[in-house]
Length: 142
Image (cartoon, rainbow, N blue to C red; front, side):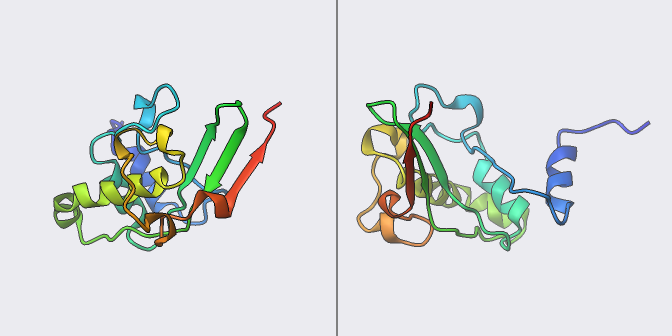
């Protein structure tokens, strides 16, 4: 009998071709609370680079409620993360994390960006950091 490891499920995701629908991943996992963007779980960006192998585009999506409790979904520009093997990718993990979380933060109002509140000038229009106003959908959640 084959003992399952913690790596079995991510490998199955990475190796499965022709997924029937998009795969959603939240880099901050269950760490987010109060609707504010939280720091990601360790190596989340490296895991995303590993899953996508530098080929599959990542699409940043932010879903939040504004002060009036209106649900807003903001979609950014697709981007890819480089994959240069596990050791090299881990070495650039902090930069990858800033890229992933910066793309998400650029889609949120300043008060919801948490530790990623400082989105560099022009980041909202850079690849991977689309301006939320360009791609936002708003609607009544009810």
